[in-house]
Image (tube, rainbow over the protein chains, first blue to last red):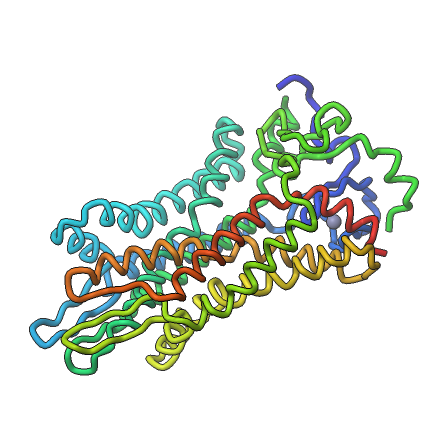
Length: 208
Length: 211
Ligand SMILES: [Zn+2]
């Protein structure tokens, strides 16, 4: 990096997180943004702690969400209970490999990679690891962007429940893992949202 | 509160909201050009492609197609002589009636409520700015709009319609309904409006008309 004290905070400025207006930092009192009336803090208070709490809760629920059944299909001829993974395998069996890949990426790969990436970023910030801030920022942006797509499976189940309703002939039921999985996606989305990405750059601001 | 003169002195400066780098505005941010943070490459401003008027029109079209998209059948499903129609509204209904109210609430917020709320907020904001009507609620509305944008999931729902159609494809006959076309138009206008809205410019205009 070219100069050492690059950050707005070190130069006595605050940036409003809601509307991005630049304000002068008054250390004596809490600053109110004159444009959007939000409270402006130098960094989001308790950002790391809250992100950790949400992420760890998400990770704990992720395990039963993958083991327990997510939906069941009751037909006259058969009764089938699916977990997330067996749903993907079934798609492969009926020669729908491209869709199977989409579902696999959205419901298994993305949540797992997202939690690992977020944990890596949080560790790096917490313990001042000398990791590339550019890489961390890119990872964080990716996490923010792809996280919501994990809702795919939840919506698919919602549609199937509504449409496969033929009393005794065929019906789909939502099983407990769907609820857990929805909560995992929400928790990890909140975890990414609570994290203040400016923390990634604060070590570089200080040490150059 | 900050005094106005205090802020105006630093008008040529801005901070990158993602990495807090202090940036000299005059060289970086020109109206109508894409500009990025030199350190973390966060996009500070997209080129203006959608005026307040076109933003309004875009949302207006979306609003016209909103209710057909929610209420009319998205697809029809025929199995052993029985036909079942699916609309977002009865998708919601069956989630609640089967006791899955948490998932029901997730669908309600991300598919039904937030897209509608976003459109109403944009109509409120753009008409106020266009006709230069002063309002205290402008800043709060736009703050809400920016929060809600992260939680609207129409695009994901579209993909899940495709995935579930393919899953059902083998078992029965499927045909698209009018609701599907309305939903696609709603999705496109919503995506276009969200992508092309110039947030920086909107905040500047709100500051001018807000108080
Ligand atoms: Zn503000």
